[in-house]
Amino acid sequence: MLNANAPKLDDDVSMYFLINNLPKCTQDKVPKLVALILKTLTQKSLKVEESDIQIPINPATNETDGVAFVKMANEE
Image 1 (cartoon, helix red, strand yellow):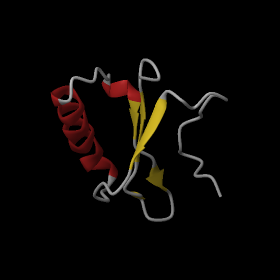
Image 2 (cartoon, one colour):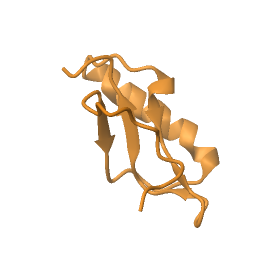
Image 3 (tube, one colour):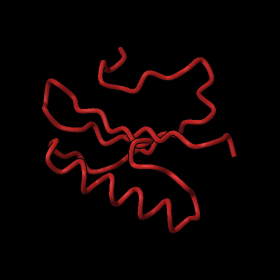
Image 4 (cartoon, one colour):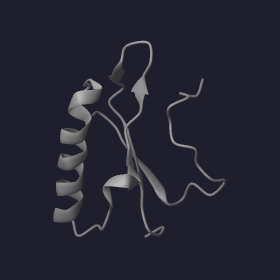
């Protein structure tokens, strides 16, 4: 079953990667989690914009499920 809040991916999903095992949190903590992901990726010399990180909220729990979808500029 797909989460309705998950990003809509094109047929070509090669530019996306999934980050698992993130801490579950409420919507108000998501910006802090996004900032941490951005900092980590920047330290690894990966250029990612904040808008390229999507962290879906589970409507049943009003929390994240501990995953983030990150869209990269290219497959590499």
